[in-house]
Amino acid sequence: MIAVVCAVVSFGTGLAAAFYWYRASKIGVSPGWKVEPGEAERNIMGWVSGCMIAITASGKLNTIAALLTAVSVGFGAISNLLMAFA
Image (tube, rainbow, N blue to C red; front, side):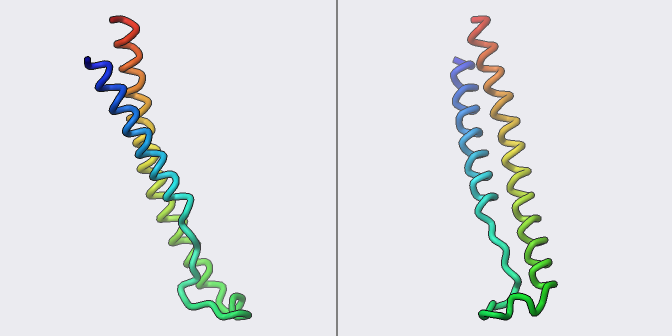
């Protein structure tokens, strides 16, 4: 019974990690102002700032996803070991 619970936890945390990685991949870069045609080159610092904000947000989501993946792998390994020695 414990092996099944560990397998379910592993599955759930694996799905949650995939969701967080998906969200991290969808973060866009915004220069911080409304871009009109031809104005994109006018203020490079807006783009630099937008990139830093996007990278930070993506990094936070990636950190959560990596931790959830570690938990998923750990519970999966426990489940496998319990099934092997049962």
